[in-house]
Length: 171
Image: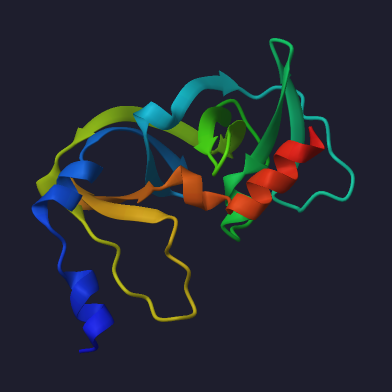
C-alpha cells in the first residue's frame, strides 16, 4: 500500500464527526443522495427555466426566484446520467455554493426529494477508491442506512470553483 493510500485510510473520529449531521436526501436515477441541510436554502417545484445560450448541457438555464436570477443545474446531466423528462416529483433544491471569495445560490434539479435524515458518524464511511479514472472528490462519504447506502455529496465540489465563477459572472 502506498503512503498516500495509507494516509487516506486513516480517518480520525473527528473527521467522521464533522460529516455527521442532518442531510436532505433525494433520488437520482434510483440512487439515494444527500446534501448537508445547512447548504440547502429551499426546495421548490419546477419553475420555467430560461435557457442560456452556449451553456454546458448540464446547465439548464436560469430561474427567476422572487426577483433573483438563479442558475439551475440538472444533476443527472452533471453526473453523466441519462436525461429524464421532468414530472410532478421533479424539483429544484436551491443550495448555497461556497467559493473562494463569494457564495452563490444555485438550483439543482433532482428526480425527487425524500426526507431529512440525521446521519451519525458511525454510519458514514469514507469514499471507496474507484481508481484514477473516476473522480470522487465531490463525494463526502457513504452513509450506510437500512441495508442500503446514501451517497453524501459535498455540494461545494459538485461544481468546480472555475464553473461557479464562470456561471456567477454570467448573471
